[in-house]
Length: 126
Image (cartoon, rainbow, N blue to C red; front, side, top):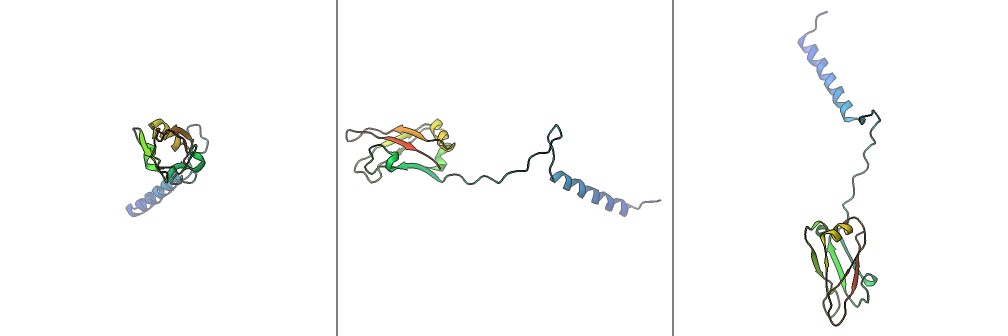
């Protein structure tokens, strides 16, 4: 039986498609066990973090908002928490604390002193 070039290329093309489709399917790890199916893509994460009300000790109008983009800062970040209060305070988060927030943990920092007092501020990203 003689095979023509056209028949050979058609057969090779079908074989390549089959191999490609097999490569796109399941698979296994080194011990031959099937790999788990991929899960859903992660969501976009928090757009911002912060605290207000009960999350600021002795609060009288202060508020904190941390943009989610700041959670990857390689240096400390300071925020003014004045909010609706008649005087300012600021709080500073270290890069390690920002990573804790990014991981979903709560972080408590002490504000600067102004008007003879300071505030304990607990920030959370949800």
